Image 1 (spheres, helix red, strand yellow):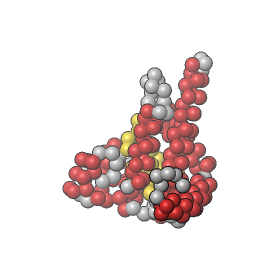
Image 2 (cartoon, rainbow, N blue to C red):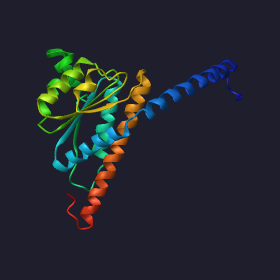
Image 3 (cartoon, rainbow, N blue to C red):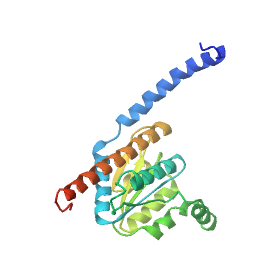
Image 4 (tube, rainbow, N blue to C red):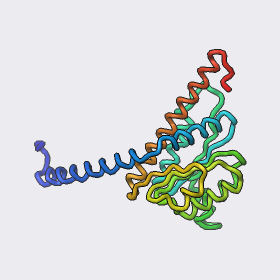
Length: 215
C-alpha cells in the first residue's frame, strides 16, 4: 500500500482489477471474432476509391460517431503522405452539430444522415456506418438511401447484426452480445482499415517513384 493510499481505496482497487481483467478478456474475445478477410476487402475498396477519386462517407451515433470521426481524421491526415497531392476524399457526417440539429429539428432525427447522404453521395462512392445493434433507424434509412443512389455500402455491427448486416454489400460484423466489447472490435477494425490503406497507398506510390505507372 502506498504511503498516501486509503486502505478502503486499495481494497476497492483490488476488486476492480479482477473485474477489469474479466472485461479485457471479453474485449479480446470480440477482437478475435473479427473477420479479417472482410476487413481486407473493404480496405481494398477504400484504396480503389482513392485511386478513382471517389469519396468515402462515414457516420454513426454516440460512441460510434466518435469512431467514425476517428476513422475520417486518420484517413485524411495520417494515411497519405502530406507531400502527395492525391488525397482520399473522406467526410464524417456526424461532425457538424449545426447540420445535425437543423435536420433533426426540421425533419426528424431519422433524417439526420439520410439527407446528408442525399446531398453528398454520388454513384460509386463508399458509405460506411457503425452500429452496435445494427438497428438504429437513422442509420438503416441512410444506408437504404445510399443503396438507392448506387453507392458501395458497409456497416460495422455487433450482436446479431440487425437490419444493417443484410442491407449492406460489405458487412463488418462481430458476433458479440455486449455493446462495449463490440465497439472495441469496431475501433480495432477502424485501425486495421487505416493501417491497411496506408500500406496500400505507400506501396502504390513506391511503384510510381520506381518508374511504374502506379495504376
